[in-house]
Amino acid sequence: MGKNKKEKKKKGKQEEKEEEVKEEEKKEVKEE
Image (cartoon, rainbow, N blue to C red; front, side):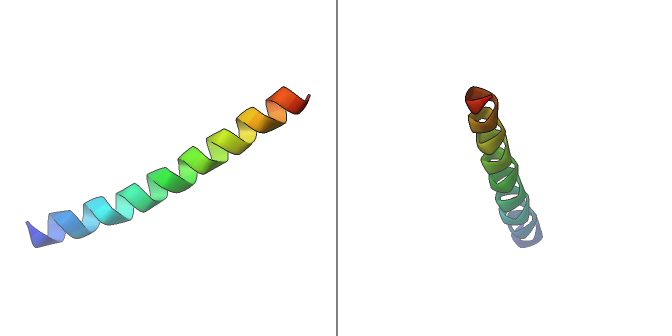
């Protein structure tokens, strides 16, 4: 279980980054 928790944390960080990129893309689209 401990290993799974670590993986989840890593995945969560990656997902957060992806979400940030999506938000930035949305802003760029609005500016266009």
